[in-house]
Length: 201
Image 1: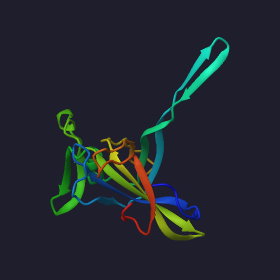
Image 2: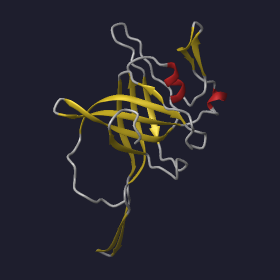
Image 3: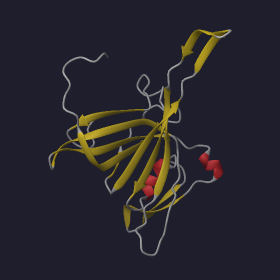
Image 4: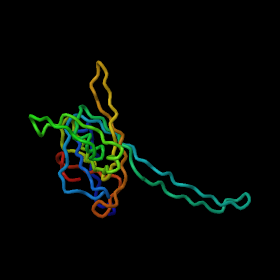
């Protein structure tokens, strides 16, 4: 769709608010499951993976006859995700929905552990999609949220730390790619200003 209309004011964003994740089918198509909401403190850093364009020059003697320049292409994104606490169900989804989550026997909905998958189980890992919501501010007031939707992220496993005088902050390095099987095909991500976390992007 071409650009139409007048430009709005730019949005001032500060602080990730929450993330939502959901497993995809093995081929990348969306499932009917609900998103899993994770609202503990998170830090998200995204860098686009760009395939640089190429330049081809045709020379005839000392004369430059022609130049062909191909465009850069966005082929993926690397997402650094740091979370403020341990979460077994989140690690399960980010790890490809394989392995096993342990639940408290006295509180069956309370996840208390995660066993990573074997190599054989990892062969059945599935990708996932993720939404990230950042706060939008006017002066000191929150007026909305910027939602990012990554349509296909490959399974990833946690890098952990346990220092005597520091909080444990599990880290993930995620790889997002385009998803040709998502509702007619989607690029690596899109973003949109919305009213609240969880709103459609």
